[in-house]
Length: 453
Image 1: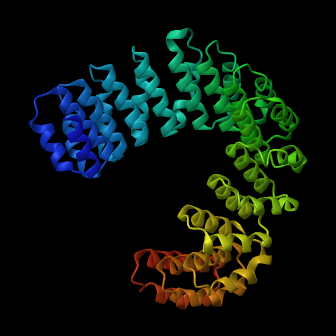
Image 2: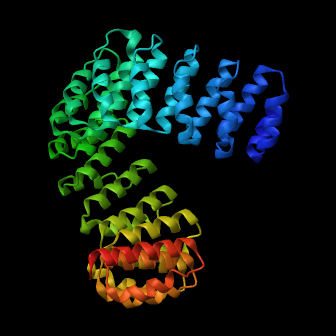
Image 3: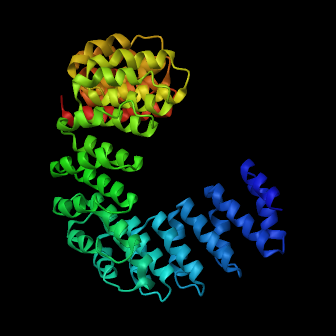
């Protein structure tokens, strides 16, 4: 029966799975069927899953709650709140996590109340859900959770620490710094992650201290946190760790962090790894150089377009875009025209769109007439980001492009530029056969009216 249900799930055979669920007396088979429906996640299943939220079998009730969370329909909020009082801890925990996925502020008070549940798995699930919802009412209860002592509360402290990071409230920083000394690694790691998420510079020296931790995962996470905070006090310790740590995952984290901090002083240390045998390290180097916008290294990124690793080539297209230099345009266009991989073409398009220097205006204007629709799309989008009024008439012309995507992005770009010359052509675009184009034209007209140009 497992193979049959799996096959039905892969084919999206909802009616077949429902027939099994409603007719088979075996509890495990029904459990498999409910799980399959949850993984399909079709909104049409909402009413069915609401029915099974009251099933006699706790595993089916739990799966139904999970499925409702995956679907995310607001009408499931009240039934899931009710299920927080289910006799089964499994169902209560699943319902809490499902409420976090929807999310709706109506669930906050009920989830705060669930922090008093006698079962730690429910308490921890409620703490996680409160972080996902992001309501400020959860702040103090989550802070209080961090002070619960003992291994019994490990999951609760860990979930609360991570949720405080999701809330992003600077008031949590001191408590999270204290949690860096928690006796349990699970809690310390999540407090470290959250300090990086919040990004308060008060935590910098505490995080730098963790760069010397015996556990590689802690060193890597500390490096990532320093990158997210972006404080230049982290540069020297990160360079030292990069040059001496034997763990490649730590090296990757250091390179990424130095790229995010963005000070070119770190370039000489990073560039040493551009030919590393590990493709992940090479990828991080290329992205870091792009983030730093060190123009002297643009040739390095162009050369990386020929790397044997698809991942490195992908990062090179994005890094070239972040360089924001006209020298990157030609190589990116060449990728679009010649690379056989759709993913590479898409990343090259994204790279072109990031180039918004006015020096690129004439180049993109010329590419608006290119035979390749990807290049026309990227050029039209980039011209909107640049905002040069020289692009108005050419973009008006591309409102008649044969590709709907090009017409859509041309409308968007005309709205960004905000020139009154585009008004009548955009009014005409309201009759375009594609909804996306019509919607983009309407939004662009509103932007022009708001600017009053």
